[in-house]
Length: 351
Image (tube, rainbow, N blue to C red; front, top):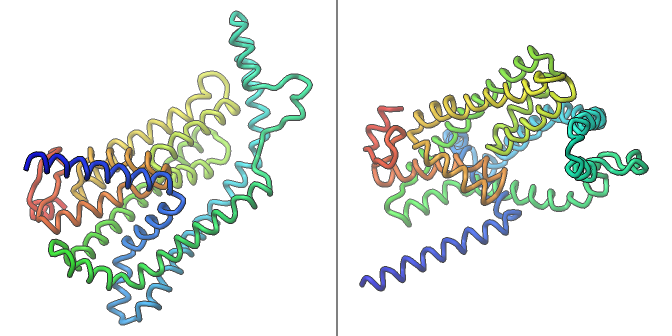
């Protein structure tokens, strides 16, 4: 019996590793599919609303999918002018940044070998300096990646539509097949995920406004751009804030002199650390009764598996899984005591 149990454990472990390895190397297929399924779960309250209005499932799915795509397109259209502005300013920033690099190089006169390495890595030879501008994606590159993007967009849209259309049937089938899960439990889990998405969106919106005001007070160019980037990149956990810190550091070096050059990046880093360590865990963790340790581990795992897309879907997947677990077994992991289980009634009173 012990040998069989050991064999079973090893088989389950190897199967799990194989599954996640396949998901890692086929993320171009499974990432948009998972994202669509998760968005469909988030739209559970909207689907329930269409049911109460007695709208046919196919029409309700079409309306929900259209509203979702319209919202995404509107967000992209709102962000696009600021992204275009940043791209247009990139050559100017690059030119001024090279002057800053030259100043750093002059400070390293005593380290000749290091200076030569920096010159070879960052700056081309004098005869080729004017012939090698910053490399930006060309129209050919955009056309090369267009089919891939179109295919992923079709997978995302198709999966979202057909999931929303068959959502009731899927929930009913799961409830009949697995006695632990009922249709209402799955709908409740979807409502919890929707609640999380609304909460985190509100947090990021407020954070973006504060970053805009802070950059305005510091005298940074285009403060609204930094606020928009702070709002959008904060959804891409870890990678987004790191990218924005680097951008603020480069812009600060170009715009300001001396120690003041590092103030924008340092201020943003402090604000982001405060939001990430106190605001988000407090609002998300307490309201949804999720252990912050599980939140962190989920972020690390999904970021490793699928990169930025994994960072976006990590916590919603965790929220959904925990809600289903709570409904199935009547217990939830407390956000205040790591590793402990508490009754679901206590979780309800905490909310």
